[in-house]
Length: 118
Image (cartoon, rainbow, N blue to C red):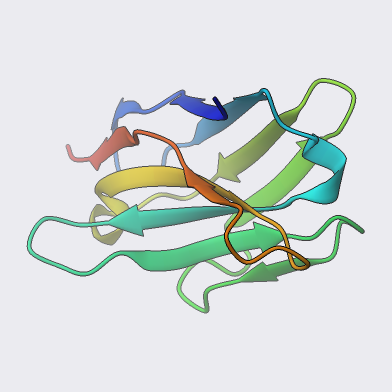
């Protein structure tokens, strides 16, 4: 069974940084597009950043210039470096893996809480 396990969340002050990690297992990782999504309390889940199998990245406008997504195919890891955090970044962050050629292959992690507060 495919597993995506997020880590690295926590409480950080405004202006601070966090690095989220997502470890994938039982997956042909290099064939998967990976992404980070977030869901704030009372809001819908939204895309934060994605990285394709060719390491092409895209970001939500709200995080451009502050967040960086990266992947390590050898370790089957995807990362989200988050800098200059603000209260609006508070949410549960989810890791996603999906394949462009097989739409049914779409997996989610359990999420990690990020809270930005002084």
